[in-house]
Length: 445
Image 1: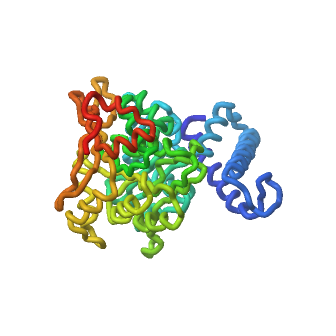
Image 2 (image 1 turned 90 degrees about the vertical axis):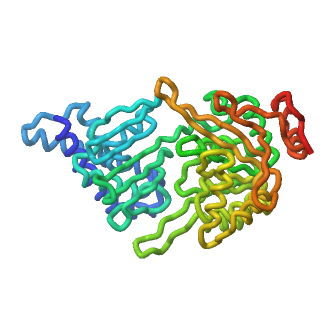
């Protein structure tokens, strides 16, 4: 059986099994017996595998009856996997999601596939569907079945932002591009602690010790950096330094932090924003979720990325008893974070002046941590913290800061030895050895 025949059998099998699952969904129990229909996603998938096997047995019987050669064991395995991927995975894209060498997948039409590998190099992939229409249907199926709520992908809603079952981030568009386009970033959830970042060179030993103490001392932190610099990864690592006994609420556009995967925070609520439906109803914004979070009695609130009107409630969270809260912001430099916050606060409905935002920021934020990235000679990408600002005061126009870590000759953060005495005392109490800050001043008043 050639590849085209296997693909056809897989599609037919997947459609038949999908129809069967839909027909018996309310009558089948986890064990497959008559019941009340209460079964887990794992039960459903196990049952789907058994239905796929039954369908392939029927295909084998039919081929024997028609004097056709039987499917080889390899053909059966490939068809079964392809059918399952169509039902619960991403069809032809799934093999690249399962490939540990691949970090990013870019599909520009059904037959134009580019893969970014771990070493930063690019590789052309095989077609992932037989037509653009099939690719759209593949993404549409994922939108309906993956995630907490069903999401649309059609002419009325031509973009999709979705977290896949393995934690990877999918973004897709149609009709606004020449061909349907899908981009998937595979998140490396093995990077989950400051020690992991230390091994990768993102932070130095002194910076790791400083950040660990800052978390324990409940400093409120804004993480800044450009796209792909590792802001979300750093936030995940910092959150995993928080005492497991604390109650956390995380808020994201699309779930990426995935703290529940490690099980370190049993008292965790992960909230996800929701887009409006076709009638324009049902939207739940980040701003709403930040306000809702305060009703959940959190010890800390963390927003995956601030980029709009949620900036005001987030800063209020940080300044009104939720010390140690965090968020990330796209910014080209550490000081550039303040400008970004001011721009967001100027947008409706709040329309704060830059001076008002600076005053609020000075009273809410304790530290700014900035990340950057650059290409190595071998084509791979290195990500690293460039600096840390301590927020100290407000002079009537802008935020006054102190450089605790500043870029060295290689661009990486190096301690200046300068830290306000009150902050130094709090971090020492949280376990920081002042020696990690270098030979400079222990602190200034």
